[in-house]
Every structure is written in C-alpha cells, then in structure tokens.
Image 1: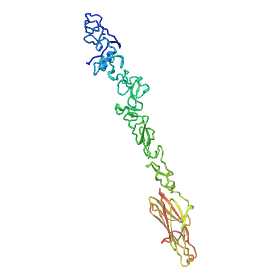
Image 2: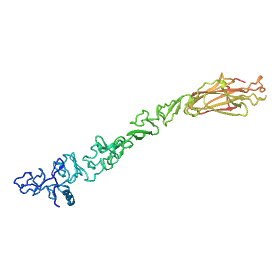
Image 3: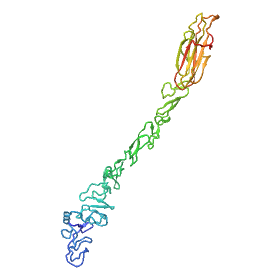
Image 4: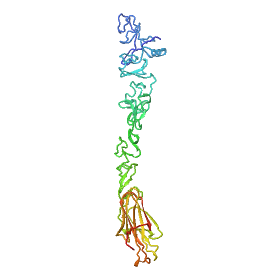
Length: 447
C-alpha cells in the first residue's frame, strides 16, 4: 500500500457522509480543485484532500464517504508509516484526528481516523499508546494513560497523592510530580526516583548534601534535623544548642565530668584533667590523710595541741644498757618518754642522758622541742629548717648526797613537742630516742 494521508470530511469532530455529484456541470462547486465534470464527489468539505477523481483520500470503498469499512480496510492493509503521523504541534492535523494538532479536544482511541499517537501539551510530545493506555507515571513526563494531559498535570490524575512513578514520588497540587515528604532526588537520576530519605539520612539530613557533622558528638538525623545522640567522652552539650555539637570540655573546674558541675574541694588546689574532681595539691597545713577525694584535704597539720594530749612512747635507760625508741607520726604532736636510772649503786654517781632525733619527710619542715619534767620549760630545741634532721640532747647529773653516790633514783620524764612549720602532705616523720649517749653538757637540772 502506498503512503496515504487518511483524512475524512469532518466538522467540529463529526464525520460527514460525502455523496457523489448528482449532475455533471462545469465548474468546481465544492472547491476541492477537481472540475465538477470529472468530480465523483462534488460536495467534499473544504480542505479535505481528494484524489484525481475528487474522492476523499482514503475512500477505499469508493462511496464518497470515510466510513468504518474504509478505516478497517486501511488498518488491514497498513504495513508501515503513513502520512498520518504523530502530533508535532506545527499548526497542522498530522495525526488525522480532524483537529489541528494541540488545538482542540483530543480523541485518542476514538473515531474512524487513525488513532492518535501523541498529544501535544506545551509543545512537548507526550506518548499515548493507542488502544492500550498505561497507568499514569509521573516521572517520565508523558501522557501514558491517554487522557490528553501530561501525567500528573491535573490533580485528578493522582487522587489522594498516590505514588507517582519511581519510588517515593507523589503527585502534588497543582498536579506536579514531586518527591514525597521526607524524600529527595539527590543523585539527579530519574530512574531511581527520590532515593534518599532526608528524614533519617546523616549525609542528606533535611535536604540533599546537608551532612550531620556535629563537634565531639555521635549524631542522628531525626525528622530531617540533626540531633545529638551522645557526646564524646569528656565533652558535653552545655549550652543546649545542636549546631555546635558537644562544645564544652568536661575537664574544667566549672564543668567537671558534667555540665555546670563545679570542682571545689576543702583546703585544696583542685584538678579535673580526667573529668573527675581530684586534689592536685593541699593547702599549707593540710593533707589528704584518708585518700578520699570528695572531702579534699581534711587533715590539719597545724593544730597547736595541748601538752596533755601527749603520747607516751616508752622507757629508755639513761645510764647503763643503752636503749632505742622509735615512733612515726604526722602533724603537730606531743610525746613523752621516761629516761630511767638502771644503776644507782653506791659505787658510782653517774649522769643520765638521751639523744632525740626528728627526721621530717621530703618537702616538709618540722621542728623539735624538748622539756624536762613538764611542758613549760624548754630544755633544748632544733629548728634547722627544710627537711633537715633535727637533733636535741638531754643530760642531767645524778644526785649524790654528801658527795657520795648511790641510794637515789635519778630517772625522770622528758616531754617532746613536734612543731609544724610547713607541710601539705601526710607522710610521717620519724621520732627516734637513743639512751645513754655521749652528751657532755647538762641541759636539765641535777636529779
């Protein structure tokens, strides 16, 4: 079959019966360009293409009309492209629907004309498969359902916002295909639709290419907004704001381990370098004896104790059989010893003596004061300063009545005062007493 333009006589979309001329007259009454003397169909509507006999092109059964038999014959014999083409919006009736392309009501799949292949909307060809419309697809920009409108161009095309093409697309007023709420097309590839859930995606939170990257925090994307799931160790969100993340280091004295938690310890210089409030150093005269942090430096080294609070540390020989006493302590204290006479025979009138030493721990300074018989009169003292060992010797002569020895006990109590001068640690000092030492000068009255 040769290529034909299959067009019928029609007005306003109505198909007309075209009858042959009843008489043969000279002229051209129907204006089809064929002289009435040879025109087989003399009332052809104006503009309808005709053949050399004046018959409408496509009048295959030669009855001057374009009835369905003509169309059926055309369809049966159609083997390739015809002059009935797709609409191209060029101001002509290319698809043979009796309406200038894109100028009137579409007749896709209706009527004897060759079914409309394309509908032109806005100058853009939109595909419509004749006789087999597809569901609307709001992603490819065509008229798949043959309703004469680009899919999703009217809100009725996607009632209730039903899916519009590839995943997560919907038809939204005024009938446009767009991503559903909470989704976005971040890769600009139409085939996978709106592939990103911007409500939860950490790299596209709220919109494409909006990553959640909060300082010192583990983030979540919730309802399209970055939120702090947790702060990194030793960091806190102390200002309650999300954009700057966990902005506060929890290692300061005002935010120690938690926001707005102050680090204040009694009698101490504090530190929070590990996120825990701890003693860095004790104030002068104080130390952390119990090792606990919350109560700071709780032990006072400078208490000015009364003599009556002394600790008796033992007896030691002042004349024969030299002995040794030792005692460890911390802070200001009073002690007492008894220097005894072990030989009071009549053969020897001998002196009694003892040497007392005080060894302070490093970085401390304690002084040593010694009293005979009571706590009121200092027999001797040592205050060398720093951590130097302090030493005091005591001696008294045995009482020998009439110049003769023996017969009396010259033993006596010696009181020892350890005075604080400077210290802030609880390390013990050591007090040592040696009996019957080589002391040349009496420091206490005769006994």
